[in-house]
Length: 130
Image (cartoon, rainbow, N blue to C red; front, side, top):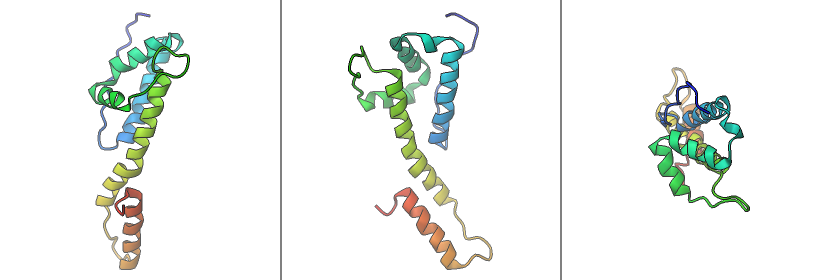
């Protein structure tokens, strides 16, 4: 499966980890397909993921402490991708909402009660009230 296709960059969370993950995952899946690794054994695809994902995702992957599905030799690539999807969904709901909260300003001509309502709604999205 050798070729001249450059490898994808390692994952970097940036300011919006959820969106960064979505884009990196898409690039990774395109890379698998372009190199025909999508047809490779599960063990090979998982190893390629660990090789390309970067230190940030490797550390988190170890923290997931995944167990192999019944009948599988090891943890499948799909299991890992699903765990990261769930993990970064939390970032989308809380971390990104927190960043948006910090940027909220009262609009010119906006009633204070309307501004206060927007702030309270965002507090709920950020889970600040818990």
